[in-house]
Length: 307
Image (cartoon, rainbow, N blue to C red; front, top):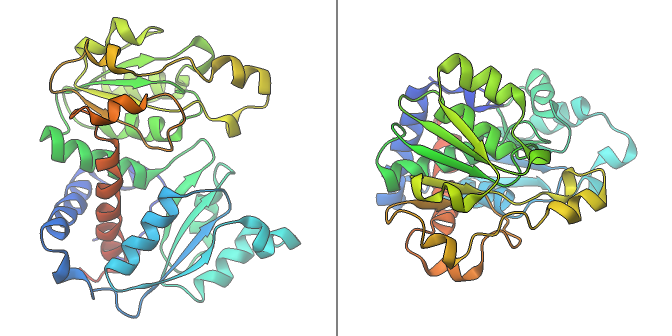
């Protein structure tokens, strides 16, 4: 039973609950008209203390497509945080108005703090470099739809594996399913943190390898998960400039890949995937966007207990 629960990180959901959410999302895709009024009278507060386009609009569209309303802000500068109000006080106030809260905050642990003081369910829409669980649900939903299962996959994670919260969350989620292995593709400076390799992969017995050249491994992958080098996570502009073009997926590299490989990306894209790849049937990142809206519709419905 998911009613009234918070979603702060992917581990808050069992694999059975993930399946339940994905199944509901699939039904919503097939027959969205049957669900358009299930949240009539309910209010989602979208609190985005950090810039976002896709995630914020996806939550807003999801809530409106199931009949609910949306309040909130998309810039911390227009909230009382700019006056010095604590996050805890903001959440207590907003929870008095809204039935459910989706929050993005640049500070790690902000969503967990919010969940401890909120009377309404809190969905973490990204907290710094920690977690982005609804992006993980989006990724899993896309993999389920296009690959048919979450198991027995060779998954390449490419680009910024150090700061990429979507990478960390997906790695943790897929490590719970049997037969998966990971190929970690990044420069040494952006390698995945030890808490993933040592704290997630090792206890689960997940095989993994690392390399710096995408060309050397792309032919072995079932899934290639590309990420951008995130300027906002760097303290040093020179390091960002030096590393930002480390990996660019283009048509030549795609020739080396399997015919049934899929390319995922949490977006926004900068230049790590050349526009020419968009026409390749293996490019699935814009399909991800649509799946993300439906999986958020299902999640909101489950947390509110309307289904």
